[in-house]
Image 1 (tube, one colour):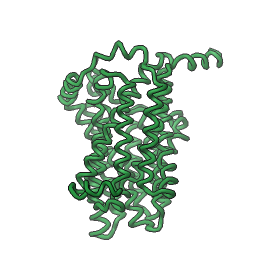
Image 2 (cartoon, rainbow, N blue to C red):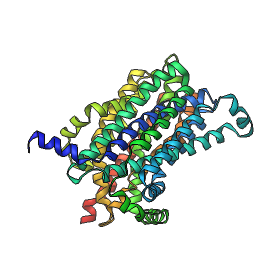
Image 3 (spheres, rainbow, N blue to C red):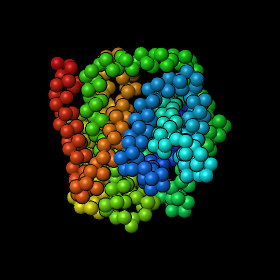
Image 4 (cartoon, rainbow, N blue to C red):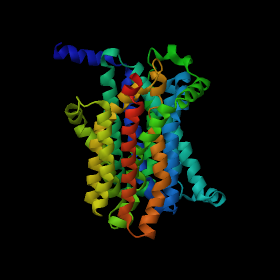
Length: 426
């Protein structure tokens, strides 16, 4: 096939909904990670919540963001991706605006009536419905809005644009924080997402096949699917084990900013801490294709084990020396593991699903992310407090996180030997 033929296949292989949905999520991810990079610092420094409470709030937020798509995705299927995206971005924008307005004068009566913890809990849980609804809409647009011949390329484009947003968010957010403060950053995130409402309204056209499939999924069926998956204890066990990997990932969001601010370099600006968080996504943008090429012959499970080992080693790397450069090195180590395991993870779990039910079970593949974020949030603040304030050896908190990553690695190996695809086949 000539180069011109390939280009023509790509040009005609995607419906307009594919491009509009993916571009909108790139900017949604930009806003999401701009918020995530500074959320812990904002809760501690501007709302004056404790490290423990702030990390716990982030854990609840992460659980909702990555667990809710199981249910709200059925609403997107039923009422259409275009409507769902508009509602999602309206929720998203409103949540960011409320977050950035917590210290505004018009919020004072509300804060006087509601404890800050529960007010922030309500705002974050409300906000979580936005990104939770975006995910199934965009993934659905990729699946339906691309021809079979270019669908794998479509998912690669989707993953690429998500990481561009994930990298640009903290970087651009850092510039906004420097100029307007953290509250200003959240309000700008709101503005960006509100603009996406009009972008989708004017440019998104429902994929041709979406209308025919719209009535197939209901909330009741989604709940029935949830029960079906949860009854498969082997699949659930693997989800629980692999969540240990994501505990280490989200430690970079719920632990590292305050760790650096308090115990590594108190003079470092919040904006620079935010830029530091972008290293993982930047590594993926520049090196994912190279890592894919180098590991193309590695078996899926070995790739996942390698990624889990590097996740644990990244925690140890951060602990070696209390410096910003060592924290950056930890992010680099983690990103290499993420690039190795992420493309193979879905391949592995698709083989764990019962025959004929791969589609249903693959919809729950992100549950380890939800659990890992939640667990990281519940323990992260306690680790900061105990090792930083009580025993005065803050670097040791990374040993605990490394132990979690190591335990997940060992348990994954035991699981694969006992219940993995080869064991099931035997």
